[in-house]
Length: 234
Image (cartoon, rainbow, N blue to C red; front, side, top):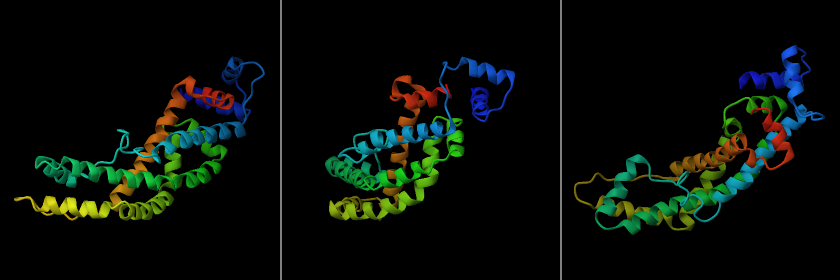
């Protein structure tokens, strides 16, 4: 597969040899694809992923009812969840988890403009590396370009969301109840940073899902440009 990738890109750079000419001969007659089209195709694929998958996360239960990205308690706090359920407070534990996920759903609404700017900045050099890369190479590119900016956007939104929906009060109540259970060690967590990190993971996870679909399933290449560009990596 790597040899075929390299051959195609050498063709685009007009490198002549017998092996590359054979690859050219296998392309449909009259079809050519240039560097700009390759970059445009990858931008389109990422735009589709952002529009289709990230938008889902902004809806109610976009995180909470999606097992790929649902935010659970950090490991050190899972004993809180278990302790509450053990004494018949499962509803309270569920509500606490739901509010963590609601905060993430609020925050992801801030993501799209940052992603759009990153996608616009894809050059042909970027596109070549992405197309030659793994099934999540485009997602990894976006991660490198957006992670810091998204964290800075998400964190205050999640902090505000905790206050807006009463998550801070519910968690204080939940943890106080846990701390009152005999023979337990007291816990006093600050979950804002944790939920911010989990929200970021969720966003990139869903973009990777869409990228893999386009790379591996012909039916997911819904435009001529996507079909042309991703045929080069088949």
